[in-house]
Amino acid sequence: MNLILLGAPGAGKGTQAVQIAEKYSVPHISTGDIFRKNIKEQTPLGIKAKSYIDRGQLVPDEVVVEIVKDRLSWEDCKNGYLLDGFPRTIAQAEALDKITEVGTVINIAVDLQKLMQRLTGRRVCADCGESYHISSFFGSKCSKCGGKVIQRDDDKEETVKSRLDVYVKQTAPLIEYYEKRGKLVSVDGMQSIPEVFAQICAELK
Ligand code: AP5
Ligand code: MG
Ligand code: ZN
Image (cartoon, rainbow, N blue to C red; front, side):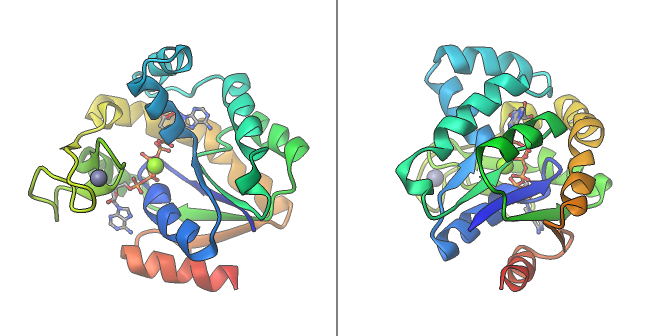
């Protein structure tokens, strides 16, 4: 099962990816998570990526493509994978087509106005990455691992604005790219988290 999760920042890609990866036993590959891990460990890649991420801009295509190419060559991708946050530009999609045969592309559709609210209210576990929202999370510790729950640096309002702008200009054209190739299914990301998951599972049957 070679899957891609497409959607704007805050559409719920990460939230759904965890459940999809578990149900279908495929590795969850999030380029954003890879960058955040490298930033935390202050690797050369992390230092480079941080300068883009902090401005809400995309990390250059050639950098991301190399990372994904390497990751997809790992043993655990033999029976499939779930890409979350990649590809994000037409150039990345074209590069991916040279590396692997893409199966289904799941587009999580959410109104742009809703995304600002979701992102500025999001909190994440600094240790395991679990995602929460201030509307239903009132503590300071992760309920999964006990780690500290924090706000992502790029979830401040100004940065969110440029991320949404970048999405519209550079990533949204991928919807048509995959539609034309007959690979796209769209789910309504305005529903509750379990409802979105149920719709995804129905599409994957
Ligand atoms: P990345 O980490 O991929 O961030 P993103 O795409 O901006 O997406 P998010 O992780 O913010 O949102 P999500 O869709 O995962 O939503 P979530 O499930 O958390 O990338 C970060 C940065 O890295 C980029 O800006 C870029 O600089 C760089 N980068 C990464 N990949 C790259 C690439 N390929 N090329 C170049 N640069 C790259 O949910 C959001 C919130 O909403 C949470 O609080 C959640 O609890 C809540 N929520 C989720 N679903 C629902 C629902 N159905 N109802 C109500 N609330 C919900
Ligand atoms: Mg995410
Ligand atoms: Zn945690």
